[in-house]
Image (cartoon, rainbow, N blue to C red; front, top):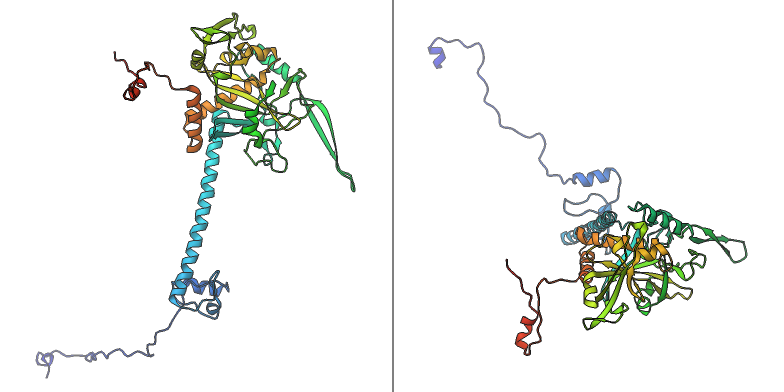
Amino acid sequence: MTISERLGIQHDVPLRKRPEPFAPQFKSVPVVSGTVVDDAFEDLDIDVDATGLFGKKKGKAAAAAKVKGGAPKKGGIMANLKAAKNKADAAVRKASAGAKAAAAGAMAAAASVADKHAGMQKFDYQIYNDDFTAVLAVAKKVNGGTVADDKNNIKGFKKYKHKAVTKQAEAQEAQMMHNETLIKKVKGKEDKVAGRPVAGRNAAVLGFSQVEDSDESNERFASAIFDKDAPGGPGVPTIVQLNEYDTNKVEGMEPISALVLQALDTDELETSGESNGKPAITVTMQAIKEAKIGQEVVNTLTKDQVEFQYTLCVHGLYVNEDKEIMMGRKILVHQANPGDITAYGIATPNGIESALHHAMDGKEIDLLYLWACYRLVHGVYTLGQSGLADKTRAEAIKELLGEGLGMATQHSFAEDVDGDEFDALNNASLRMKG
């Protein structure tokens, strides 16, 4: 008798049966399966190499898979790991090459922005700072560096504050001629090339100047003369040899197709007697009514004094019919006023004279030549002050401006005292307090 029966409790529901232990319907057997990636590629019927990192590739394709550049896989874990490493290394190399290309593209874009900001976007230029320091600049060329384009022309004295000077620059340019060529192709015969002079400026011309022989220019820049079979590529400055029809109708003046900016060497300037026992140079800044300069100013300066006034110089390059480079007149940049074109000088047999005066006269140089030199100076100065991303270019420009501007010490002395122990003192600079 149960406790419920003793208590008089009736049960209409039968007692629950004891649960039976679980017995599987099928025998448990482990099954080898592929990976999600392998199965997906297998379903798509795409033949790929298994890496061996995520299981064994199913099917006959695994046995036939080959390691790139080696023998067929044997299925060993070390072989699979080596294959995986090769693939990973290749991916890293590809990514690295892509990153380098992207970095180069970004650097080129940054340089382009810097050039536009500095006003250098109309030049192809190169900075030299190995055996010498200089900037070589030419009119920008397109089509892989083979064609000069009118859109890159620099207009002389455009929007200059003195309209009379601008009108004179326009009048000078209106006299310019250039060569137009025609290539006629006849089947079975050699091409026939014809040329004729037409009005207008050659897009490669940066102005006109009297020229003279220059061994130094040939030694430094002869390799930059344009070669149609090896044009140099986009952005590479190539010095164009122009035709006899490229003229401004002024006797002796030649078309300039390149400019060189470098530090001024006063030893190359003509002297006129002595001043205070030292070689003297006459500096004449003529009156120019079109630029509101009403009085001529003449000074006699020693070479040392000139060093403090004129720092950099620019000169043009002309390629003659013998593929020799000749040098145009030197334009001297005034240290205190590099942004004032009326302060620029020109080296003459009489010493230094006003560059603007001679450009207005148009017999030694023209206004386009002077303006192109001015634009190059302004551009290089601005690049030097803007903090270029390319450290090599930045250091070269810094060196160029350093050579040209020099380092002025306010208070210095160097007495001729005997003895090595005085060398440091002789070269010391003094700073005055108060």
